[in-house]
Image (tube, rainbow, N blue to C red):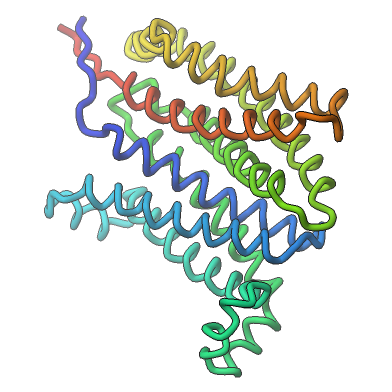
Length: 304
């Protein structure tokens, strides 16, 4: 029996998966904060614009990887392909996120003249249905976030990917990176009520990291009982220092310890801003490392 590393999906796809999940989760969490916490519209608009930018850049990486015309045409016209549904989800995401963010941009004085160039009847409709657009953006963001895992897990030839645990892992990781990004934005904000939102985001991210660790444990436990190819992939990851130390250590455990310490012991203490910036930044780096090394560890198994 022999194994061969997959050589189809590389760092470009890992970047797309990371940015797509980050962009989708940021809009989903930001919209929920806006709807239920009544937080500052300016910060939420900055978060949504950033998320749209993440999605645009990620989509460019995806398209760059699909430069082979026949492969691209087949994937984009085949409803049985997850890339086809990914395009549908991403288009819905862009429509909902743009419709949602336009009324929020009025909170930026230097952008208001440009917003006012939009016909007033459209602005009135967007303002009137802003909460509906927020819900639509949150739904589309969730679909994009979970789709990134479904895309990878639909590869039956690589047993380490072909498991329901992978979409769960990716979606919780995506929402953790989204919470971390919003945590960074609100940490640097001086708007009233930001400290309360920071506290909620800390708690959310800590809960997401704990859930991610549980899913990781189950994922690797099952991997060692799956076909030999999955065991080989799991062994590759555990023998990769950047996965163990970079992702598990600094991408999950260290941010969890920082956030736990901040939640229970360091609220409003001097240096808490530095702690939050460190935790948020590490979570973002860890989110990319997870996707990069899961793709890197994908192997084909041959019976000879």
